[in-house]
Image 1 (spheres, rainbow, N blue to C red):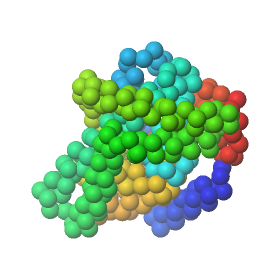
Image 2: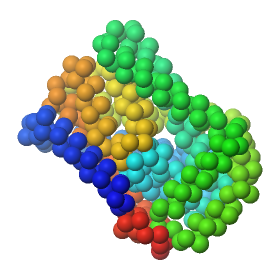
Image 3: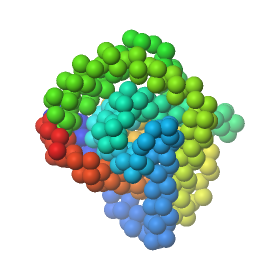
Amino acid sequence: MHKKHAILFIASIGIIAAILYLAGFDDVIGLILKIKFRYILILLLVQFTIMILSALKWRIILRNMRVSMKNILHATFLGYLVNNITPIGMAGGEPVRAYAIYKTDKIPLHTSFASVVIDLFLEIVPLFFLSGLAILLVIIEGVSSEIAIILGITTMIMLILFIISLRVATNRDFLNRLINVSISIISKFPIPEKQVLKLRIKADGMLSKFRDAMEEQIMDTYTLFIGTFVSLITWGFRFLRVYIIFLAFGIKIPLSTILIVETTVVILSFIPVLPGALGLWEGASIGLFILFGISKVTATAVTMIDRILFYIIPSVLGIISAFYLGISISKITGGDKKFH
């Protein structure tokens, strides 16, 4: 792992350790161990459904290309892994999975890059809608001013992300920077230097093709409507996952509370500060649940279980997918640029 990433990762673990200490480590673990096995099975089913739906959304975007669903799943899992080990917000794995599907299925590079940008766009649009819904719920339910302020700030962040998404399809200079940044990210992974050099040489010529692919896909009504619909279902399952965790502890938490908390925390997680938003996610989630009257032990236990489901499990699958795709994990974490 790069030194800077390693330091940030250690800092993230330190934050989580501090959170567990302040909440009462023994109490939190004791509560987690009380979960019945049937809830564990249900939660695993929900998590796998979420990951399959995410891959399906990407497959919808690439439906006109000869792409293997199996390779899309592996590239998606690899993207989860990269997101979780790099401090680039929740979009750090996009260039890597674009490159992975380009290599495995031999589709044009500009098409694979455009597809992951559209995929991210379809991820953001429903979140923007959910953010507005969360604000409405805050006003209707008259929750604390602290939550209203936090949600207002995160909504502004969401608006900025939304505007950036729109700029991608229209601004040539922005697209050029996006391609160069993506290539820089890819160059940090175990890929031959000759391949990276070839990508840099192709960057200028790829720009117009990339923009054409972007415009073609973003104007595709089927992709926009069906992709957004699948994305909304995926977000629904993510909220359901949290609801089931609370249910496992015998608590029927209002869905509006989950919507407000999870939307706020997810938006914060797009900020490129800590690897996989470790520490940031836990702290914000626990703090917000406490503001809604949940005890610190329960809030911490719920957040930790949720984190295991969408951080640990996808990361493990990402490691397996890296081996399947021929990428050495030790090279990824060590910064050696050799592709096996």
